[in-house]
Image (cartoon, rainbow, N blue to C red; front, side):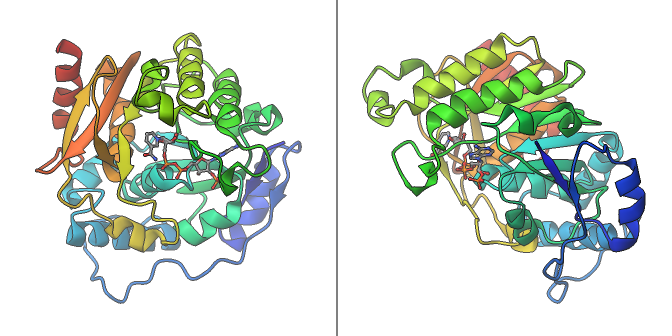
Length: 338
Ligand SMILES: NC(=O)c1ccc[n+]([C@@H]2O[C@H](COP(=O)([O-])OP(=O)(O)OC[C@H]3O[C@@H](n4cnc5c(N)ncnc54)[C@H](OP(=O)(O)O)[C@@H]3O)[C@@H](O)[C@H]2O)c1
């Protein structure tokens, strides 16, 4: 059974606990490492502060991003995003992974509420620091276990993004039978079966090459079935009747920033590789920055024409769309008319 963990302050605990379903065990206030450190950033005066911890996070995130031209592009975009997105609650599965953690950090910086379902909640503490429950909710769960995906996990959730995965070849990360078959096929099937039909968008991160897993060079990558199982996961999504978007990245670059905290995470940049290439039909081959994939996932939640579509995505040197929704819309649209 999924377990919800509280990252909220102690005085919130009693109220939240009473509201919380009796069937779920909520673990009391976690002693967290200090939240965002402010020493190297100055505050902007254009961001509203609703609660102390959330306000601190917003201010710091805003400035960190502005300074480093990282995940978000500008304060103006941020404030308009937060207005537009205030009603969203985005469930991120795989939120501790390379792409997933960038998605969560970016949602936080936009004031979009996020919920993560992760196997090890300690990782959320070290990555995202102390966050108000209105910003980030942490649930413990494993997609291989259908019981961890019971309806309470989706309560209030408007959008779902899944970035789960493991290594293509046997590694320590397969320990405990956490293999591509179990994650990319069974886990995705379990997740999709549990998502309520009221969801506005489900975004799945898959991979280029899934339609060609029997052909060289993809057959090498597929020696242990990763592409085959991702394709099975995709097919299940396509037939589930949910409003979906599937993104197939090329080889991922930048990160994973696995030992970073939120502040450092938001300073990560896509380097020179910011221009985005989007295709359809599994023809695109190349590399893509994890930051670009994270941004594509967030953009796809709202861009209507991406519903029911599958896209390959790469990034190359040059200026990119950053977080400009109009530019992303054009990119997705152009891919569909190619
Ligand atoms: N690497 C590449 O070049 C490449 C290329 C194309 C596509 N992709 C795909 O792109 C996606 C994102 O890549 P990434 O680099 O962000 O992956 P990643 O860093 O390996 O992250 C995978 C995430 O999945 C979670 N996860 C694994 N097993 C789980 C389970 N049983 N239940 C719940 N969560 C589970 C992991 O959590 P834990 O921390 O608990 O393990 C982690 O948060 C993946 O699907 C990957 O296969 C990768």
